[in-house]
Amino acid sequence: MPSDELVVLPVPNLDKAPARYDNEIDELDAHCQQLARDFLRENATIRDQSLTQLRDWIAKHPNIKRCRTDARFLLRFLRTKKYSFINASHMLERYLACRVVHPHWFKRLDIEDREMCGLVEAGFLYPLLEKDARGRTVIFGDAGTLDPKVYTVGHGSRMHMLVGETLYDDASVQCAGFVLVYDLSGITMGMLGLVTLSDIRDLATYLNNAVPMRIQELHFVNTPSLALKIANYTLALMNEKLRNRIMCHRSWEDLHKKVDKRLIPQEYGGKIPKEDHIAAFKQRCRIYRPQLLALDEMDYEVGRDMDSCKKSHVAEIETGTVGSFRKLQLD
Image (cartoon, rainbow, N blue to C red):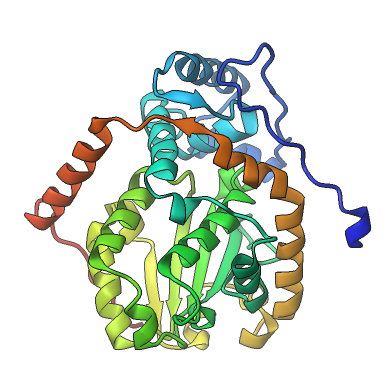
């Protein structure tokens, strides 16, 4: 689609109690309907009741000042938490709070930003054009494209948020989830030096508690030994479900045993060139730009309970009460 014909999405309503709610949702295909029914416990009645309940909670929440209440946005949390209102509302609250506590990680997701655009064009992280056989969206990352002299861990985090926020409203993504593949062959000591233990703890806390993202598999390819040590430290902070979905591979041939190689970029054994995947994602960022910028206008008042909850989580990790875990090994 030529840029002069680009149709961008409208800015969402951020009134926490609008006179009229946006109930428009995407129609699910047969596969996603079955997933929603069998694994998410979804049906029309439960979906409508849950949306009403979550909207009423938002309208009455004293700390939430401005927030999206459209069905596509709220279904991110309801479907991720399989329609548990308590869990979905807690995740939404933490999502809003994290955006306030760490704005340098989660805000300014703008494709017109020079540094963000540079990372997109370099291929640091992008969704692939075709889904896998189970309807899951595959996200591909090349860590070696992040120049530590130019970028920080904040840029890396914002790139992950940029990819996620352009996909989270997609009903097929909400139902089928993600597969992530990272090429770590280009990682350097300078890149690893960008990340502090505090950063890892905070990002792990966010990933565990605040990200409306159903990660089904996470693959690391060509992982250097030093990066493996850091990965295992990070792994200790993750919840058990996610830990069991992470795999490391010595080569692309090993990855192909787990992930259909036709899906990944041509340069790694697939059929579609990397530049085509990146161009499509860049176009997607332009389409979603008004919605992405509007997220920064949401408003949440962070209370003391947010900080105490974070300290409690870190203390639990440091005292070893999280328990034993499977360390990553190279397959």
